[in-house]
Length: 161
Image (cartoon, rainbow, N blue to C red; front, side, top):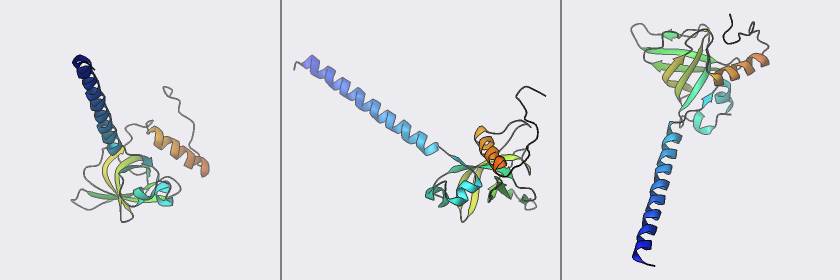
């Protein structure tokens, strides 16, 4: 093999190795930042997996804030409430400023981990208007409504009044 071919071959091998390393680092970063959405029933029943229940995995908890469950200590940012999907309720604790639209009987998505049977939220998202709910939450809440024969009223088509 002449020196020119050898040098080209080394460059090609180095480029392929660099691309492989870059792809591996990107895949690891994406996997580490991925948070799946589960309902309280899925977490309590174990469908979400052992790592979720053990608090080893960060995930999103979606559902509705249960009526009469919100409590905040006077002069504190520590809030506790329960998230329900119609089948089960999960206690949630959060320390921080809640979104302006956060209230009972409204959709919520909380990101965090399980700790001693309680979901400890790092971030809370509340729906931003009367028609919006994250698709994953809407699908799972729709299944719960069908299961429990909940009347959801007339369907709102997007763009209609």
